[in-house]
Structure formats: C-alpha cells, structure tokens
Image (cartoon, rainbow, N blue to C red; front, side, top):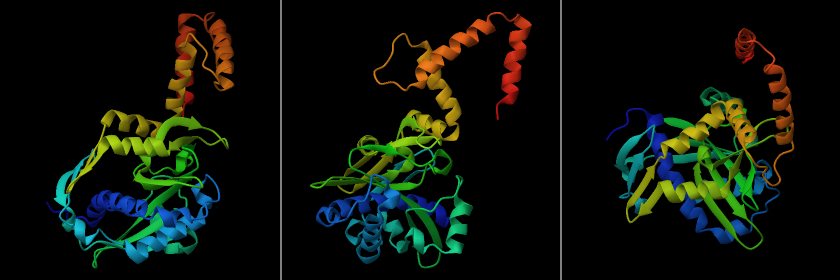
Amino acid sequence: MIFYDFNDTVNCFMFAYMYELELSLNDSKTSLLDVSFQSDEANTDRPLKVFIKEFIENSFNKLPQSKLETQLNLNLSSYKENFHYKYFSNISITKVFLPDELSIEHKEQIAENKSSVYTNPDLFFKISDGTNTTYRSIELKSTKNNAIPGSSIQQIDADEWVIFVKHNKNSIELTTGQYIHSINSKLQFPDRSPRPQVAFNELTSWNNTNRISNDNLLVYSINSDDEKLKYDLISDWQYYLADRWIEVLFSSSIKNNEPWYNNNLRKFIIKFLEKYELLSEDEKGNLKATINSLIK
C-alpha cells in the first residue's frame, strides 16, 4: 500500500503517532502531576503545553523503533487502509511550536488549511520525512471533572487531533483522539457563541469502542451514525438546535433543571398557534414561504 500524497500519509501517521504518544505520556504520569494546571480551559495551561512540547521534541518525535512491526488498520469514512508502522519510519515531528512562537508564515499556513475560522492552535507540529514538510494543529484540553465548553463552533476543525487531560491533585489521566469524538452533543452558549461541549469521558468512551489495540495490531473503526450526528451539529448547529426545541415542545413532561428558555418556547408556540390557526390555507402557505426565504 502506497500513498503518493504526503499529506495523506501524514493523516494516517497521526492515528498511529497520537495513540503511541498517549501511551508514552501516560507512562510519565509522575512528571505530568508536577505540571501546574491553571484552569479548566486548556488555552491558559501554558505549563502543560510546554511540558508536551519538550516531551515530544526531546524524547518522542517519531514512532518507537520497537513498535515498527505493529499493523495499523483504518476503517474510516476517509481512509480504509492496512499497513505497518514501518511505513512511517522516516516521518518525525521536527518541531513543536507554542502559540507565541508562531510566525506570520505559520499563521498563513494554518489559515490556508483550516475550513473553520482561524484561531491559534495550542500546539503546532512541524512534520517531515526528510524531503517533504507539512504541519498539523493540535488542540489541548484539560479538566478537573469531565465536560467543559469546547471551542466556538465557527472555530472547530472536526478532524483536528486533541490531547485531553483530566486531573486533580492526586491523579491524572490523558487520552487522544480527533476533536469530533470528544463532542458530547450538548450545545452551550456561555458567551452568546454556540460551543458544543467536549468531555474527557466522551473521548475515552469513543476510544474504548472504536479504537482497539492488542499485540501488534491497532485498529480504528467508525460508527457512521454517531459521526454523522456530530458532523451535523458542527456544520449546521441552528438546525440541530431547532430539532432539540421541537423535542421540547412535543414532550409531555418537564425535565429537572431544564434551561429557562424551554418554558419561553412553550409560551411562544402557544401564541404562535393562536395566530396561525386564524390564517387561511393560502395565508399559511405564504407565511411558510416567507419564513423559508428569510433563512440564511
């Protein structure tokens, strides 16, 4: 099996590398526990970023030599491939940039490759095989509990890799995966911008179900229905939210601690129906057409 495009090769390399990085970092928990965590938002956890940068550059910039006979099976919507780690033996992370180390050229590179709104990555990998060079943005999340507000929906790159750390004073856990699989389908609006919630347990659960490792074999497989739901949330969150509101309106019960606006929705639909029922069939049709024409 041969990839002729270096970017495709690196995309597949990342599945192997990020898993092995996870294992190696979890073997370094004693050192990780010494890292100063400043808040639940990874954007402020500079000591963690520095630790991972130095860890990769100094001791884990490529796949371990002892693992090169491991077979990687990808059963994904984008890739369905089988090959050995040794296919990636020439690929290494030659540099890890922190946000304040990014040059104008780096930022242009990030903006060019992002389908989402530009934002500085937490870590930025420079990846090379000695001839070709490419870059990958890495998201870093940390939490003391489980779930935290994720990135603004306009900034999300669903396939971006994330390093997710769950920590307290006495213990630390770490997992890796693509951002899409850390989303738990809860949509929050902490600053008037929709932010799909991300959760350590969500990503861990996805890995336990869809990422299998034993002996010299690493397998990734995709649940297409689960993947579609989350991609739909990112690509058109307004329709996703509208579906949730429909569920609220057709529910015959009230949930404990439900959002205040659920009650406002019920009041709105009563007033809407009272007015709508007075319209003729032609007027109803015209109203629907007008509303559809105003949707952006």
